[in-house]
Amino acid sequence: MTTTCPRACQPALKREKFNLYLVNGSEHYLSLTDDPQEAIGVVLA
Image 1 (cartoon, rainbow, N blue to C red):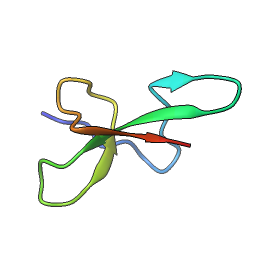
Image 2 (image 1 turned 45 degrees about the vertical axis):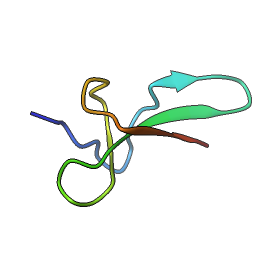
Image 3 (image 1 turned 45 degrees about the horizontal axis):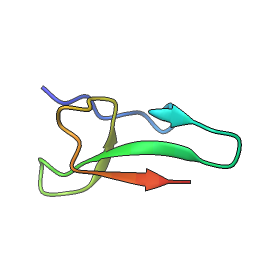
Image 4 (image 1 turned 90 degrees about the vertical axis):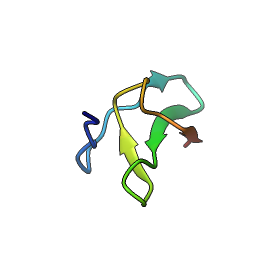
């Protein structure tokens, strides 16, 4: 089962100039997730 991150979701990867978050779209809407197996995309922020 996919875990949707709360508002204060931790990035999957932290770097000095950006953070990488995982995106899940399994429930007909996009949300952040901490499960790499369920991720369909990424967000760089």
